[in-house]
Amino acid sequence: MSKSIFKLGAIAAALAIIFMQHANAADAVPRDAGAKSSAPSAADTKLIQSAMKAAPGKVSASATIVTMDKDGTMRTLRQGSNGFTCLPDNPTTPGPDPMCMDKAAMDWVNAWVGHKPPAAGKIGFIYMLAGGTDASNTDPYATKPTAANNWVKTGPHVMIVGADDNFYNLYPRSATPDTAAPYVMWTGTPYQHLMIPVK
Image 1 (spheres, rainbow, N blue to C red):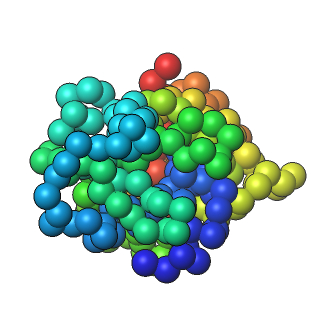
Image 2: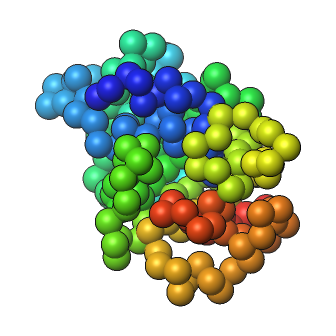
């Protein structure tokens, strides 16, 4: 995995920052893949607990949990069985932002990070029930707020990614949305997605 992807830094979650910093976790082959499982360390136990806050208990309990070590290496903390992958909170971002996503969502994130068009017809689902780091609502690659990039604050939410325009056209697409109701983020780009607040 190229470390340069992660250096794009603070691109927000609810997508933006957290996606950019964790995006390749879904696709990475962790360095301990295939190793026999053993009891996690105290530090890894905390990371697992953080990652599990991203999704409902019945989802996170069976999800694969991965983390990115300081050297940029992806590491599996716990192998799962339900097709979801969860990541713990990123301590370098302003707010809590653990996330959990299915395979289609991981493919979508990898396309976004790689500046490639997402595959058509692959709808993905992402949980961020602990909240998300704030992001530009109009620029998928913004790293900080400006007068023109419509920065929004996000709380606990879920996301639907990879749908077609007919789906997103059913929801508000304003550059300055009411974030207390469902809205489309990054509208008009290949990476538009539906943000659905849960609190």
